[in-house]
Amino acid sequence: MAFEPEDVEIARKLFAGPIAFLKSAPTLEFIPEPTVNEVAFAGRSNVGKSSLLNALTNRNSLARTSNTPGRTQELNFFDVGNPLAFRLVDMPGYGYAKAPKDLVKKWRFMVNDFLRGRDVLKRALVLIDARHGIKEVDRDILEMLDKAAVSYRMVITKADKIKASELVEVTEATAVEARKRPAAHPEILVTSSETGLGIPELRAAVIEAVR
Image 1 (cartoon, rainbow, N blue to C red):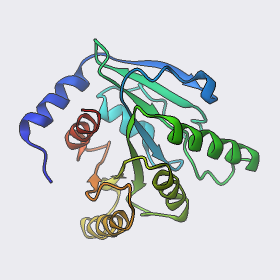
Image 2 (image 1 turned 90 degrees about the horizontal axis):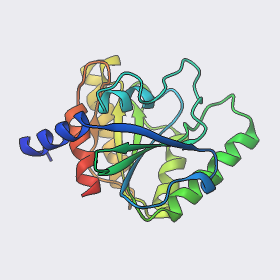
Image 3 (image 1 turned 120 degrees about the horizontal axis):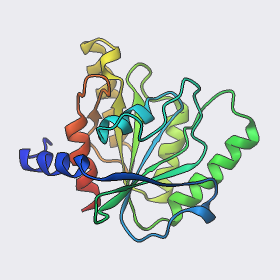
Image 4 (image 1 turned 180 degrees about the vertical axis):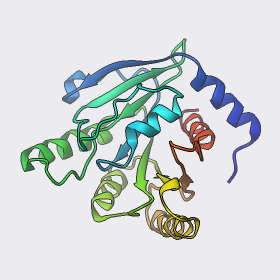
C-alpha cells in the first residue's frame, strides 16, 4: 500500500513543526500521564534507532546516537506538535550481548509491563537491520507484542548498507514473518537514515497509526 501524496505532505508538515524531548523514565512510575496517543520505536542495540528517529524528525540530535550499543536503557518520550498531537516513545535497545543479565531481566519486565498497560500506545515500530534480517532476539520482542496485543509494524533500517538483491530478499523474509503473527501489520517499510529512503513513508505511517 502506497501512501497518498497528501498524507505524505501532512506528515512532513507535522514533523517539520515543534518536537521536544519530554522526559526519560527509568521505571514505569516515571512515565507521563496517558493523555495523547503514542507510537513506540523498538529495536535491538545497534539497529540504528536513534539515527532513524533523528531522520524521521529532521533533526540532528533529538535522539542520542552512540558508538556504544545499548546506551538507551530508559523509555524516552518526545512531544510532537503544538498543540500536542501525539508522542514518540524511544524504547530501550534490546539484545546487547554484553549487558548484565539482571539488566536484561529488568528491561524485559519494564517493557512488558509498559506494552500491556498502555492504552494510548497505538503502534510499535520494530526496527530490523537490513544486514542481518530477523534474529531470535527480534522474535522475542515480536512474541511479546503479540501477547500484549499491541499492533506493530516492522521497519527495515540501513537499507543502503546492502545490495539491492539482498534488500529484496530480506524484505520478503520479513514480510513472511509478519504474515505469521497476529498483531503485525502485513506491509514492511524499508528505510535508510543515511539516504532518506522511506523516511516520508515512515512519517505517514506514524500519522496513520495515531489518527
